[in-house]
Length: 267
Image 1 (cartoon, one colour):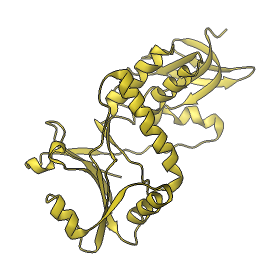
Image 2: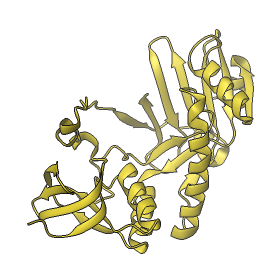
Image 3: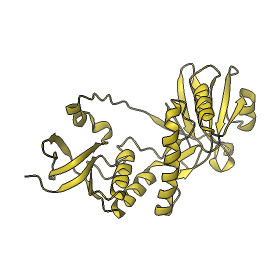
Image 4: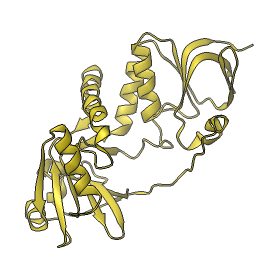
């Protein structure tokens, strides 16, 4: 017989799972989170020091209301945790005027009344001399964008979730789940019954999603840190997060915020 009955079980307690635990528990549900490691850890999708947060989403303007709400929630969580989780460094996005990124940013900003600034390639280089911008590209700067300290965010979400009554089983492997009168989750720590199941297991989610007919392709996304050797790439010197749409791909990065240096990655 399954031991333990919950209103919701969350599989994976990284960036998504920890936030789901917090929000579900804050609504009065009895919540259990299960993670095969001990979050925050270095094996999750929300790992690597920082992630960009922005409002003028070039992917689609429909994301914007969710992002505006997320800003409010991050600020609430900062108040609870008593530490900075979000840093608004600004974000410069560069690409062809008729590409994907810049038109998408401008469209989202126009539809939702967001504050963005258009810049020529020369103006981008003049404001931030460390950049080299292709002559056929333009820029758009979003002042309210910036970065999240992701491991601190996971830790804060878990703290808020536990304060609201959620439980966390760390170092526990999930074997599978099945449905009946309730959902039964089988783990190496025993079986647990729940009315709702949230699967947020990152790279380990494939077998857990298979019963739903959802195919998951896991991709490795490499992040690199460099020593730029220039004080002008420091966040405290006004250097922003950045994203460049180039002919060979789209790349993004962060200002220097600690001795690890300037971080860059393939989008």
